[in-house]
Length: 381
Image: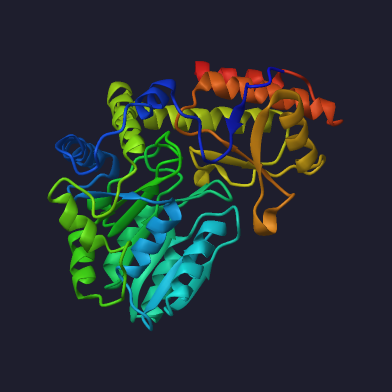
């Protein structure tokens, strides 16, 4: 294999388009200059349709986890009661963030690999009327589950006064979301997933209900104060030094989205998901998630007759192809393939072909090309 050739098929960070890499290499500008103000002024409105909102989308120089913490610290206070819907490692992260701020956490756990049942959420919030917030993960990266946030939002809005706060880090920009129409109060995502950028930017949108809550919430915060960001955004700037090179890249990412069309972006991600799932089905290799809960951005595979780490090591050593392993209780039990952002059906066909060869290398009995053929048929159909 070529020494400097890498194939990254993990659920983030995702590959970066060459045009975005070039854009990030632009000469630096002053972050308080008019040029920077003009850039920020034109970026924020273009993010709104991706979130499905008419509200401002805040651009934060930070990781996705910082945006999750921002969603917590701005809306709930120590001693408040919240419900966290846990379907994997990142739902569990919401729990830990809330606990760090002295918030009373109710957790509703779903078996890893399954989506949240809205009826269970309805029953729980009816029994706990004091909830100030309900936290959910749209795409649970650790399991490849896409949770039914539209239905969950409807339940929360109908049966409680809690804010509905959603982690969309590993799927916004790859799946449809209508934040305003569905009734999501805070939606966050990060730059290194479907937005095809390096890590370092986060995006946060809030409903009018959420802004009202934030204005009365006295929990101390400084860098993560959303009100501070909203005030700065009204002047086309940021309260703290922005990652300008990433903003240059974001400008090009949004241009790529506009060229392809967001509906086509969503269709491409769903197609890649179907191609990968059918490839493994053709080899009778078990998938972790059922069809109705599968994410268009990451697929989790749960083999029974070969070692996950043997496959991952062979892929890396022989082909410089990187896939992800399992997290926490699924460590060494599953592997995960990212297919988001700068990824096409051609990339998926290559990935499946290489995985088939690697499986033969580690002793798995299979018919070479059978998974590729299944994926090809999905593509052609």
